[in-house]
Length: 339
Image 1: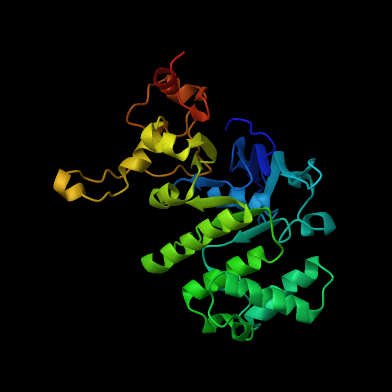
Image 2 (image 1 turned 90 degrees about the vertical axis):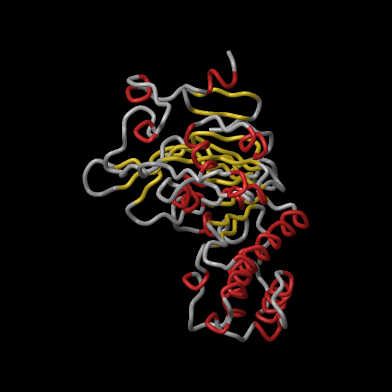
């Protein structure tokens, strides 16, 4: 759910992902739509279980075997200006393999699960180069060492022959970023890339990603539940709840004028400097994310919403309202945005 963008690097339209459990398919995401422009950071935010990570995996055709793209488009712009629909490529074959790693890179929350423990860092990064390009092993290693240096790893040549277990958590995360960037992708998907890191290392990784965006003009889809990181990193934000995007727009507008009750609740749950001095208390969101087997009808947030209007919110899908680039799926958008 967002405003159409001219010549986006990636455009996702009405994406529906379902769980095939042997019976009737269970809907995981519902008509998810967003676009990312060149050199832009789009943050996809929401609580655990909102559908952020499964959406990211769908973009790379890396869904688990029991998850399927039921409908929708994932349009990646080609160098000629046309687009290819990743949703139609399937999970295997030369077409999707030419996109993964080469045109779209992905970094994950836990780098140890992304690297093989029995192969050196250099071998694993050089392998990506040789899969996508006809270069010698020596040239691939040189590319790997250059990237390790670029992401701030000391002695990058020596680091090539070290194993993942010999790296600290922050260094492993840097190495994973280097592997994701090795073929110069137009889009980087970062799925909770700093959650497992301490605050100091987290700041270093965020600064590294900001520099990569600035220097390479790369588009970044940044997936997180941390609105503090969103404020630092993002140009635009899409708020996801129970498989649907409920609000999207420029990050400053969303923070200044949150319209969906879920967005407001997320912001109220964020601690701020000076809270104790001002007597402000953090307001946790009551209730929990609905079970995928028992999704509420109408607006999915209505059982937790303090301003729900029943039966309107429980019986009908929420209407969509917009003001410029700010879009919200909620009855309260009418009052906030005007007629």
